[in-house]
Length: 345
Ligand code: PHE
Image (tube, rainbow, N blue to C red; front, side):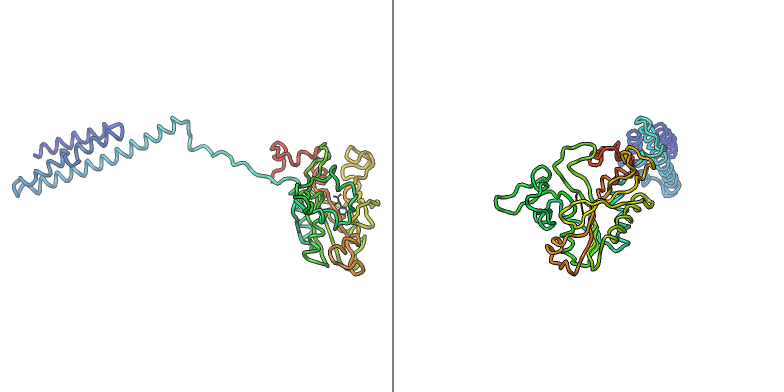
């Protein structure tokens, strides 16, 4: 029996080391150590030995069992890692190479400027407010003192919603000015608010006109507010966008919801003697504004004898174009990655 055991060890270890794959190895294992395996059969025969031989042969049989188990385990690990390595080579995969770079997002130029201005104006006590993009005719026009026969109300400029016959008309807001009305109704006076957001117009599109663009409204209502306060706010805003003080001037401008109304021009930030951007004049028209019309204050329930205020409307899209040298407003809403990827965070 001792000889048979030694032969089992020798042949078993040889079979284990010759196995090239896991299936073969499992076969070897069950032939040796399985329920009907060779070594198992020998162990069962131990009972027939004499009491003197039994412990000696038993010890030998156990040693062999452990040796075979150890060899099987070692061989299994070796085959597994060889198979893994072969798989990886087969797939052309080198796990030591660095991973694919994750694409980095950026901030849209309009959003970048809006965020900067929100910081500047929040620090001056303004709240940041917004209204819905679908607006009532009352907020977009009536409360802003825009007369019923004003051409801007009719089809060529405003995108109207389909509503049931007889119910109040609604449109895609044509400017952020209705947020003046909404904020005053929400907070009353005194109030400082800015309202960045999307606006919509039925426009023939070209390099400077799009049907969807961004504005930022500013509004301050308090006792004794006048043009100097407005100028200060507008100049601070431009300093925020261009990073330095620009020389500015006011010209008269007409908007039904301000009186007096102005257009603010700034010295061209790009030249001294006239260039393409300022069309040779060294001035660029940047921002309309004015003192809040008494009719607007009345529409939101304020007494124009007690309160006054100013409002301005910044073209966020246009300002972004100026700051970044973007030559066509249609890039802004294009979603074109060739454009957007130039503005990495
Ligand atoms: N809402 C006006 C527009 O879109 C701009 C404006 C805002 C003018 C506030 C005066 C005061 O053209």
